[in-house]
Amino acid sequence: MIDKIKSHASTLRQEFKKQTSTAIMAAFGLIIALSWKDVITDFVDKIGFVKSYGLLATAVILTIISIVGILLISKWANSGSSEDKK
Image (cartoon, rainbow, N blue to C red):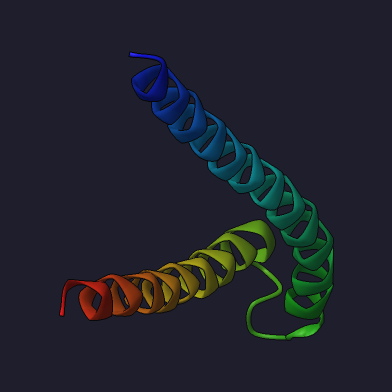
């Protein structure tokens, strides 16, 4: 019984660390995204044919970059799990 409790406590501790580290990495990612947003907005403002659309063009560019990033990270994350199954 005590071994089972220790095992559950250990599992809970590992899961807590995993979820906490994920939340901290997401927070850092948000900080990075906010800093790059200004850079991309400034770059889009300097492009002549996009200038009239400003914020819309910035949102589209950021969305495309984000989708590509999500796809790459998802592919990377899933490649590790398929190796574990073998």
